[in-house]
Each structure stands twice: as C-alpha cells, then as structure tokens.
Image (tube, rainbow, N blue to C red; front, side):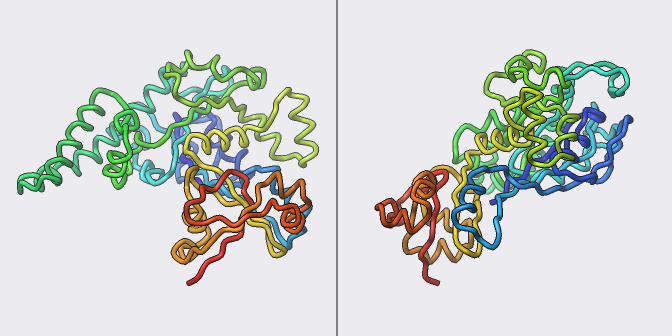
Length: 363
C-alpha cells in the first residue's frame, strides 16, 4: 500500500525544486521561468522511520526495506487552465489516482524569483488552483452525469439515486466547493470513488517559506492562505530541503539543529499525509529482511496480511504479534517469547502501529 501524493501549484512556486529535494534527484527541471516542468515527474522516496534502524540492530538482517511514498510532480496550473490557458489541465490525469494532493503555495518574497502573477498572494494562488481542480472535476462529472441520467430513465431505484447524487454533487462543485467537503459518509465515498475526482482527495498545503520562516507555527500561515481550520499546513523551505539532500545523515542532523528544526520537511510531510489518510506502519522482522509495511488504522490482521500478498489474507490462520517496544526491550523475538510478550492473535485482532508481526497462512 505505497502512498502516492500528487504535487500541484502555480508555475514557479518551487514545486520542481521541492520535488527534486524530496526525491534527492534532478528529475524535475527547476528554473526561474513559468512552465519549466512539461512532462510529469515521478519519484519514489523511503518513509523515514527510526524504528527500522533499531529493529535491524537487533535482528541483523540481510536487508532493510522501508515503506515508500511516490511523488508525482505535474506542470504548473494557471488561471484558465480548464479553458486551455498555459499548458491547460491535460496533466491532471496523471494525479487522478493519487491518494492525496499536496498543493505547493509560495509564501516567501524574492524579487529575483518571478511570480506568474507578478506578486506574492497565497490566498489568491490557493483560490486559483482549487478553482481549476473544481472545473476539471466538473468536466469529469458532467460526462458521467449524462450516462447516469440516461440509466435513471429506466426507473431503476439505484440508478435514480445515483443520478440524484451526481446532480447534488454538481451543484456543490458549481458553488466553488470541494468534493471532499460534499462526501460526508463512507457509502457516498464508495459510490463516487471510481470518478477519481481531484477535489475528493485529502488535500495538504505545503507553504514554501523562506529560511527565516521555516520554524514558524503552521497556524501562522492559515489566514494568508484563507483556508479553514480542518486543512493541514506544512511549512517547508525548498531551498533548505535541497541543501539537506546533499548532506550525510550526521551532517543533516547537525544542520537541522543549527536551523532550529526538529525534522526535515520530507518527514513532516509524510507524517502529515499518514495522519490525514489514516495510515500506520507495522513490521516484519527476520534474518532475510526487516521491513516496514503501510496499512490503514483499524484494519484487522487478515487485511494487514493482505498488504504483503492477497494470498496471505485469503489463507490467514493467525498472527504472531510482538509490540515494537516489547521487541526492543526484550532484545528481539526470542527474548519476547521468554518473557511472555509474544502472543497469537486471530482474525479479529486490530493491528497496532509498530507491531512486529509474523503471519501464519495456508494457500
């Protein structure tokens, strides 16, 4: 269950610089002019998790495999993209199946870095991007609505209810509201899932700040962005992230301390995305490998096993579970067994964040 995050924003707000920094690559062209990025860029990064290192020190496996996150960076959107302005919205298709969308909003001021609208106005920029995402969703929805209305004419109750749902959503979007704020229950979310609406995805706001603002309280930017209290804001200085990418682990740690930062922006972003999407991590630990797996909070043992392979879920028998803290305190699996900290759990067990698990299954 690798997390996939789409990166959107106006041209020249630092999207490509941030993408390169997060993925420690130079895949995305970054320059001081609009539409520098043309083709979508995809980068896979490891999820930072210090627990993996601690597990590996005890188990001494042949390899250590972190969970991963995939970032997709697309060309900058401009006002009127839905009508073909700039490069249009043709690249939005590349992020329709992402789990979440991170909107990069420029907050820093620098006369040497061109802004596509001539001045820095975070609230205006947010409104432009969200309007373009809504217009793209309306285009998708209008096509599906025509088909749904045709099916509703047959008199089928389910078809009529579905058409009514789409009509209500269309009105909601036309009022300038995000689909995510329309979908309030799991049944509705399931019905609309196959539309892959952009504004139905959890939305993170990455504010690209100056070096002086990188330790500022995220809430201090909320008014500038004009967004409600439920939306998540992550301040990141793309320039600092770029510098961190060129440093060793120890050098990066010292650099963060000097800057007064608790963690790099990548870590903050991934933690925020996990929290927003309701994800957590469990581990498998053996001499072959120590590995982190991403799963949904609240899922039971069979579903967690299915993250590894569907056969594990279908043939699930039991799960041998040791809590992470117990695994470390007891010096590993054998010590945990001797101290009664290892237990056998069945199909109803809800896997917890940090559990070290070995699944028993039959195929």
